[in-house]
Image (tube, rainbow, N blue to C red; front, side, top):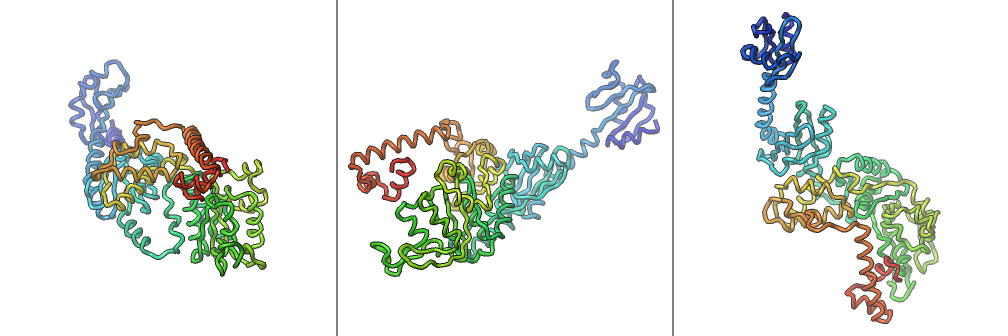
Length: 500
């Protein structure tokens, strides 16, 4: 009986020791008297069992009597503390100047408030992986906010079943406005903090980008269409010692074959009919001292790859029609959405150029491989388009975020951005609901698998262009005019469909 006070302290509630008839021999802890008054009833409910949970109390039959334990007082105290935390959320939000949320053990937001203390029902019900991780690890963490781009968030487990999170929204928005107003090089506007997300995959990509930025070596940026390869290229340039120098980007797949050489290397006076009298520099000269980004390098014509290799190796460029070469100091960044090693095996890409480009490789993960970043990206894009269109979109149904997070996004971040633009276009007030989602996300129209979709679209496009060319007697200029395309666009389509 002398241990009854210790048992009460251990459970954080009441402890009562009595005989089989309910006569109390010792008691301790808050609510002990009430528990003692229920002793006979609890023992009767126990029956012949050695122990049982009866009406919220633990009943244990011992050799000397019956032990009753009840943690109701502790639970009441926990509930009071939880209620106090809920009431404190608006005050905390105003002090930290950011969004504040309470979340459960699974990382689902139970309550959320804006920085001014107003309730934020649009954030309630959203499950965040980082909050769940903080609960699993039972320790606080700091990282990127999934609610506000550029903001930091702190996540703190307060009890086994809930935690507190808050961000520095107002400070982040002020910093973003200052950064947007600050002058940048005319050809670059992306920095590494524009790469949103806190998944392991995107953190590794950011880490590697930071690491390679200090190097003068060539970087090959691999990734599917729409993943943000040029964003990473600009971020690497802006982190490098060449940040104050030019950043020149050229899409190798958008150049007609007849213009590739003069675009890359420039041309001298009189190099060809229609050439400017003083000639013109190519992109290598334009990027001198800075960075040249060769986007979609896999589309570079095979017969031009040897000339590109020579310039990269020799660090000098000779304009078309010129006699002398000019030295250039250019760092090369290249990107591809196709595996270059596979193109090498197919004989479509030079082995020596591949090895020259593939000094450092950075893989930009597809969106489906960093699904936990989708909510942060969705909030960012919806907010951005709402500002551009003069709308409010601050009440986002959790079901919308869930639908976005469940989709595979074959077009990656670019497709998600387009989806956000669609949503903001169709909303009428500040509420975003599942009714505002595109049909393919609402299930109203089941999308075809990407490969099947691409095959059908290519077939239809091939038939249309082939028929138009036949009608025009093979005259590409006439066909382009009839199709409403410029000649460069038609040339690029013909190349892609193997019709040239």
